Every structure is written in C-alpha cells, then in structure tokens.
Length: 290
Image (cartoon, rainbow, N blue to C red; front, top):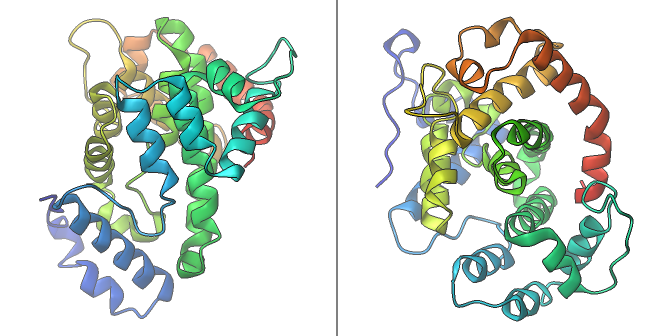
C-alpha cells in the first residue's frame, strides 16, 4: 500500500488531520480526495473519485495488444463528447499542419495515434472533473494544475525533437506529470506526490518508461546511465514550466538540475524554448479544447 513519508521535522507534525483542523473546506475536500486515491491504490482496479469511466476503458483498450482500431473507435464512440474532442484535436492546426480535414472518428484515432488519444482522453477527464459539484472547492487548483500540465506537455514536445524520441509519448508524460499533485497541500505532499502519480499510472497499466519519468520528475540530481532519456525530458520540462508560469522566466533555478546538462541545453536554448512555449500555448489549448 502506498504510504506518505513523515513530514520533515522542521515543519512539525503536520499530517492531514492537522491541516483539516484549519477548517478550510478546500483543504478538507482535497484531503478526502487523496485519502480515497491512496485507499484505492491498495486494492484492485483503480477508480479515481469523480473520474469519468470512459478513461480506464480507453486506457485498457489501448494497452491491450489484442485490441484493434475498431475496438478503440467503438469505446471512444460511446462518449459523444470525447468523440467530438478527438475529432476537434485531430483537425486542429497543431496536430494537422497539412490542413487536411477529417470527418469521422476512425480517421481521427488513426491520425492521433495511441499516445495522443490517451492525452485527449485525459484532457476530457480533467475538464469533466472540474465541473463536478463535489470537487467545486478545488476546481481552481485543478485549473492551475492543468494550465501547468499543458505547458509541460508543450515543452516536452520541443525537447523530444532533441532526443529523436516519439513526441506524442513525451507529450503524454507532460500531461500526466501532475496526476498526484495538489497545490493546496504542498506542505503535506510536495515530497511524495510524484510517488502517488507513479503508483496511479502503474495501476492503470501505463508504460514503465512513463511511470518512471513521472516518479522521478523532481530528482534534480539524477544522472542518466547512458544518453538522455524521457525522464530527463520531463524533469527539464517541469522546471521550465515553473520558470515560465511562476518565476517570470527566471532560469536561475535550472542551473543545478542535471537533466539540462544531459540534454545539452544552453541558456540561450532555454530562453528560446520559453518564448516558443508562450507563443504556442494558446493554439495548444484550442487544439485540446481546454
């Protein structure tokens, strides 16, 4: 069973109960959500509270080597709003630079590929969660997290070109990086939210390389055993997204992160990536229906 490590001694004994005692409805709702998640992780199939049922169904079909495109189209087609979102994304300028329009779900699934279908499904799920009455008190936190996730995914795409790895795979890693995070409880979970994210993704059957990347996203001292890898891309992308969204483009925090050295990125490179991200975020949000 997933267990949260004890909080650092300097902060005192501030477990979830201590935070709840502050009688903050947002924190209480978040704690309840995380408690349900950690409880589910110790059981069988993972069903996140308020998470649309279509998500694990699509994920299971995509992860089954016996599944065909017909199976994926059939499952996605049972949720008309998801089907419409997939078509919208496949026809967007970001994912359809040639401008050739598609008119049916099968064509959209083929154009996007498995990883982008998963990405669009996750976007759809988060949008649905944000509208849930029971999660209204944390809707703002979900919105902020999703804004950062879009930025991280966008940066991941740029860095993927340097490694010549599938951009759709690292894009998915960027979207999923914050699956265990909630800014309302940073004092409690900052040290262990990547472990929650990794455990959730493992439970859902995501590729080991994606689970590893999410679990190690804050390991700034990590050194790749060989060449730079997807984990390096995610570590660097999360740090750059922080610089862009929270520190007004200040890159000084990136100096001691080994992933940047592994990727061979200069300060000029990093500045160029931030400028590119600023210019493309709007188009990416439109493509994903955010």
